[in-house]
Image (cartoon, rainbow, N blue to C red; front, side, top):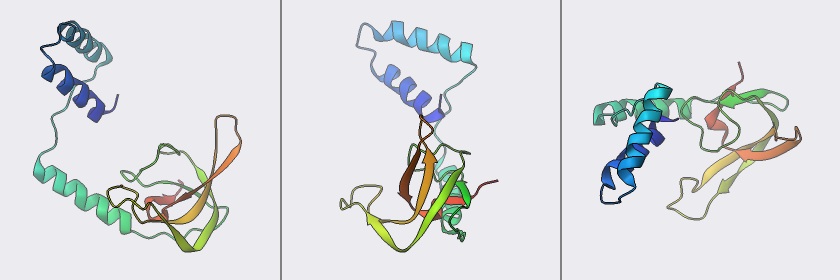
Length: 142
């Protein structure tokens, strides 16, 4: 279970004490957390958040030159889509000369994201699917 999800469930249970079912759910959830060896971590401090933002923003602008046929993967901390998963190799199919600018809603995390690379990945049936991505979020597969 991801730390953020664990924290969100814990906060929800703590904030919903008026619901008669919540105490039972809270006890069961705590048992699950203990059995699984998980623990809810407190949110990071503002200083830790600033450090993480600095690391990730530097990682985002670190440029790699890709070519068709090359295997790539997400850079750590920069995955913004469900697929591919971290560490999952995908293949560069095409590098676009002009990026496609995603999104028209300025409130979206995808607003004007420059989709400049077409990547192929395998679906559950082992069929090749092609998707446009922002190449800044990828690094050579190792």
